[in-house]
Amino acid sequence: MSWFSKNKNREVTVSPLTSDNDSLLYQITNLQGIGSRQRQEDSFTVANALDPEQYKTKGLMFCVCDGMGGMKDGKLASETAIASLRSSFIALDRRANIAGQLKQSVYEASDKVLSVLEGDGGSTVVIGIIIHEQLYFASVGDSFLYLKRGEKLIRLNAEHNLCHQKYLENIRDGIFDPTECRNDEEAAALTSFLGMSGEIEVDGFVKPLPLQKGDVILACSDGVGGVLGQDELLDIMNCTSVHQMSNDIEQHIIAHARPNQDNYTALLIACI
Image (tube, rainbow, N blue to C red; front, top):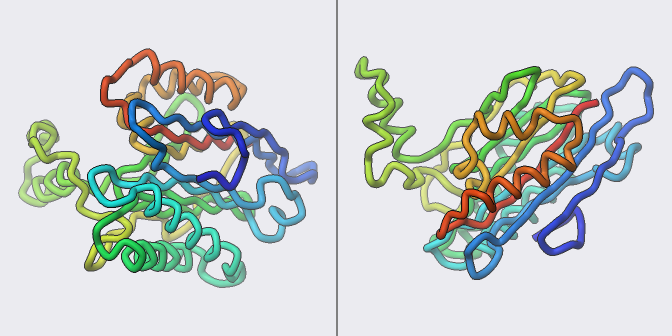
């Protein structure tokens, strides 16, 4: 599901969002492919990207949702989540606690998915709001949110899977070797996702991250982040064009030639 561009697999647009001399501009590109799957179950949205006046007053929202394979109708799950989160962004009170409202909107999206699919389907989510040149985010599941700043690529969110859960338990027990967790056959199994019964775990910022010129944000499903390593992504993102970054990400995914390549979706936002 796309709320950004109409093309089926290659969806790209670049837009400056404000004309103030001292303000950041944003270039935005999106990429989506089906991989080796039968249909596309990732969904994404970007709000206010094409309207400078709306962006200045209401901010920019971006979101990637990955419908869960092996469960009922991942496409419906991710589309339901996207629609709910977009509605919550439209209703956002910009004068109140944005981080708290963003987290609540994720809980509401999870309830919507649960209601529609009755616990038989689910979706991951990574969502960000940029307002007054500051980034808020929330995430559930194993989708990725990266920030490239200078020569570093920083993962901003944590994965909700058995590997990460076990690693945190080991740290509390004084064990700091992450390899033990990675070797578990069920390491990638999700411990939190939209649409699950019971309370979900939401990762996110309490305070926003101030953005700078030269920053690049990458939000993507695990069909991207689970295939391309952090060093590989950093090399790809060491260019000045987000359009080129998007092309190179897809070419690297194709070059890996995974026989079970998942759907892949990425949003790139460059601060200029």
